[in-house]
Length: 294
Image 1 (cartoon, rainbow, N blue to C red):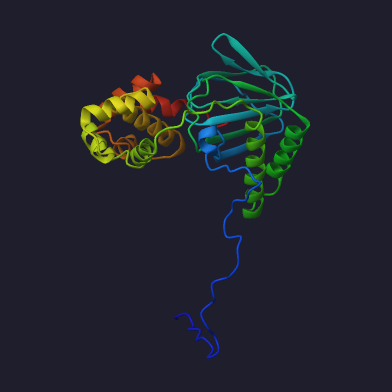
Image 2: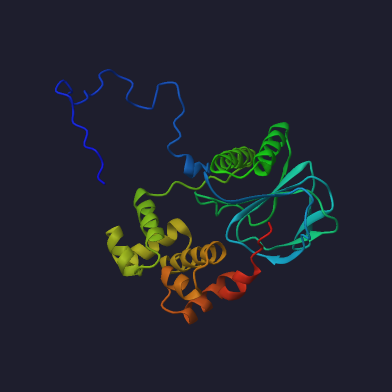
């Protein structure tokens, strides 16, 4: 059965283009935020929100993930161990843990446990890879309570939508309290190269291909790229592929062979060798170590 065809009435006409001003989003009095990503403002992909009102056996050694974590416990008794430092999880604070930060989960007693797993959509590589403690201000405390209420409501598409917005509000408010390192302004041509590179990780990203795209000679391009990023193009590509592979290992059920191909590695053997160089373990072991419970 086809869809009915709606015939226009004889008097109908094409909609006219609205006349008048105020077509621009900018005014003489506002502050433009077009360069917000460079200034460190970010939005987020939120992978998971969890809340266990009675806690769990939260003891997990050698956690290392390709996404960020936010923790808040409703009582004392658990902590994150980072090297020789301990970061207690307590009601009066939030704990943020950047991606690629190795730590241990340690819990002597069960405590109400809230967590978010998320990925900032703008680069945050300037952050030191160590836990960050944020005191729980009245605003953050209210947002935490709203998030817990949304997480414990009966599951439905509408409550998931509400949960996402409450989680995003907490993350934005938490990040607003951080002193985010400002990235140096990069040439527009470099931004174009990096966007192309990250969108084509499965393809040919050799120095020659990237240099042609930048309209430079190969040797000039390598020096120019390293001057602005601190890395040679080959090493930057290798790191980008390894980090993307780590995300796929943690967040998807694709086989290791599929992930190797999707990230531009010619075979599993070479993929494992490169991945171990960046994450100190092979992809199979890395996937097994990922913590599901938060």
